[in-house]
Amino acid sequence: MTLNGIDISNWQGDIPLDVIALSNPLDFVIIKATEGNSFVDAWCDKNVEKCKKIGLKWGFYHYLKRGINPFDQANYFYEHCKNYFGEGLPCLDWEDQPLNYEDANIFVRRIKELTGVWPFIYSWPSSFAGGYVESNCGRWLAQWPNVSRPDFSFGGEPPNAVGLTAAWQFCSDGRLVGYDGNLDLNYFYGTKENWDSYANPQKVAPKPPAESGGSMLVLENVKKLTIEY
Image (cartoon, rainbow, N blue to C red; front, side, top):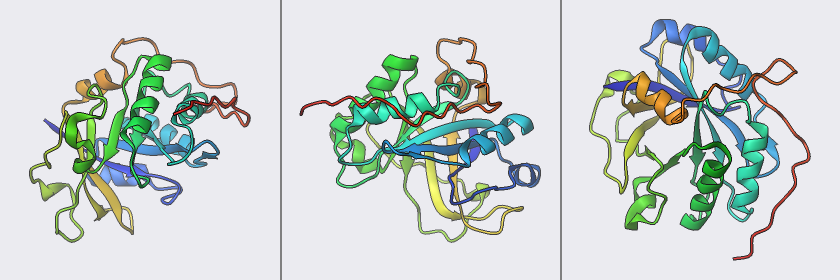
């Protein structure tokens, strides 16, 4: 079983997910939430709420910035997304060069400690060579075959990587009915029930929304923790 999805960020802004979902076989959306220790995507919560309203599976991701303490970044991600855990699928975007597998491991292990959930890790297949990256995390692989403007009918075999290939981003120039622009298109290898199991392996009730009415809890001043390497 394979699910079809897109990943988005503030670059897509107020993307019409309802229109896209009506016109394409769309099953999930993964949405940028935070970056480093100072950026919250202003469109994240709005697009999460759209996914809930129209019944799409959804995930949320943190962009890991090189040179900023990864333990601190994990805390930042958690504090800004407390009310997402247990419902959405958390992911780590690990692509800021040069890569350091210890940074990725520190981040995902801290998130597991805080939430009980292992995030997916997004990166290139070569990033996982050697088996040094936390094996409990599903691999969300980025590799784009030489195909121009594909849609979900593309098919194809996912690239090989060390660890469990859970998802594949197969293009950055995908085109779907209802959106006039390029989109990152992805396959998830599993069922909707599998998605839910990754997002909430302990099957605990999701936390209630913040008092502001949204799902995201935004804190401006998060205590920074320092790790000496």
